[in-house]
Length: 593
Image (spheres, rainbow, N blue to C red):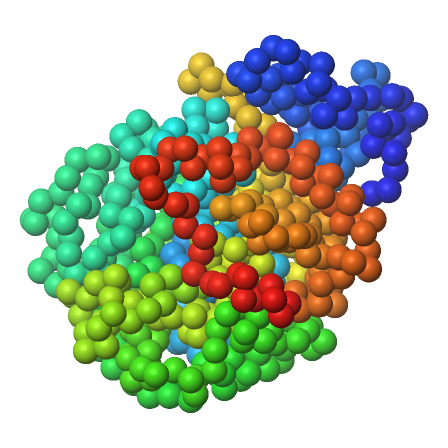
């Protein structure tokens, strides 16, 4: 939008957020935060009133993302009086294009079937890291607002647990009579931040870096489970699903007239690289041509199915600090690593199939909004192989010996640059499938408008008729940041102006086709995401006005969203320890790009 932000559409003078904060700055940090939250809430309501055509006599009608927590354009409710079940399935450390319906070569027939019967989003974004993504997904806030801007527990109170100024999807749905259940990886703080204390009736929590053949550490509502709670052939991905299915069956037996919410955050395919032998054997030889050739083949498939425009370039290997397969000194080891990784994704898909079959058999599938996505891009951490004689796959394999590496992670993120940690598309682009037979009538379609994690809460509030609270358990709740994605699902029309990100000093902002993004301690880069979605041609020098405008939006967002700098949260680290900067050599990349 191009109108003067200091004057609304009716010519009435109003404050910008910076001006507002300036009037309360002398009140102190806590008062400013509270006042800013109330201000943002009023701005959001003013904007919604404006969308309805009402006269905002106080002059608080917001025109866009600059002045509103929820920078939406206004939309009618999609609640039709019938509350759907809601299932959210989250993959861990899985790249954008690994699954079949996104062009990948891993066998994922169950996810492919959901995509064929639902919709796919080609430009959905996470927040580039595990805990922050989960916080944003469950609260509808940016991770900094939700109290989890980095990995759980890494930086004192900054990442201790979900903020009491946030609400989870479970807490929002529970008052409507929903049964609320979780099985999988939490990684959002404990004990006060545990899922059963954040709205879940019953939650099986698995360790954040789960050993797939070892059930040690699994808890039910914070109570450790003994060996008798698990089968002898225990495998984490199977068990996470089996316990989820059991909870839903119990719910349907006891409360057949009530809807349910299931949060199913798998640990797969996060390291360590461990999988069942039969699943690994299935992929023997599948990747022998190496990541250079396989990326090219995947890129062509993605264009053919309409996931990406034909004009987009395949990002260069060295733009992500990757190298040619021919230069890999341990090809046999790398092949084994990728075969195990594929087996882990395959096993996850098999288990999603079990869950879908149960929903079909119990007559629940048609009235279930089922969402599948991933928490960040492919993971290039633990690039170096310490001991090539120790092969991935078995129950004792330790990720410290090495993960699947830059080359395969780059394949996982085809056609994009970079990885988990970074705000370039390889770090934040996620597969996103929405399946809901009762409501999504245009099936098998690919929608291209951008969206991000904050929009999941908004979508669920929209379609369930829920009320997002201003206060909860005696705490003022930060206004939601998202916009319902139903307009994208149904018409591929966006209801949102701006998308924002920050992690470890890597940051970005997007409006329409323009994306401003940078690495920590480096200048802004500007990309036209319509023409150059793989971020190969920086236009910052050609369009300084756009850089300036989007930078202003980003700075204002950091104030509203409580974004701290690296130096501010580094004080919580043990003496001598540095904040990780990600797996790629950014200096080397920036010398060329």
